[in-house]
Amino acid sequence: QVRLVESGGGLVQAGGSLRLSCVASGLTFRSYAMAWFRQVPGKEREEVACLSNIDGTKHYADFVKGRFTISRDNTKGTLYLQMDSLEPEDTADYYCAAVSDFDCSHGMDWWGAGALVTVSS
Image 1 (cartoon, helix red, strand yellow):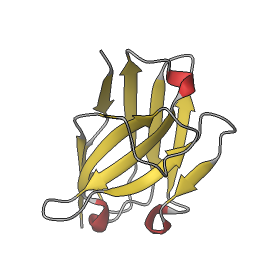
Image 2 (cartoon, one colour):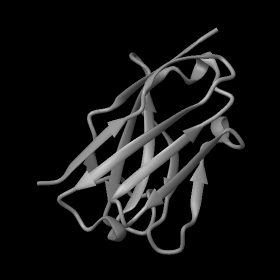
Image 3 (spheres, helix red, strand yellow):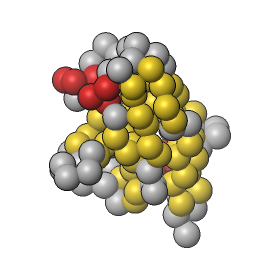
Image 4 (cartoon, one colour):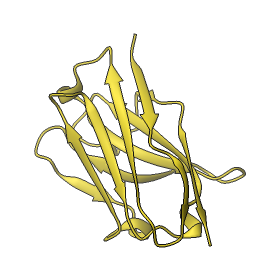
């Protein structure tokens, strides 16, 4: 059974930092492209960042470029999202996702339950 479990969410002041982690089990982690998405209640879920499993290519949404960094540790089966210079607009539920493909452009296969990030002004 595939499981993706996020951790590291919480409350932080604007300008602060948080690091999200996602531990994957039940799949061959290195064979999956991994991504972070976020969703605000009442709005559509949006991709934050994607990390290829083939060549390490990273894709970021424009609204986080230069502030967030996606990374992975294949030996630990763990995906990370380092979030710096956080803004109140970054407040959302953040989801880890995996796809058996080299990038995230064709949809995701597996999803975590989410981690809430709240940024106060």
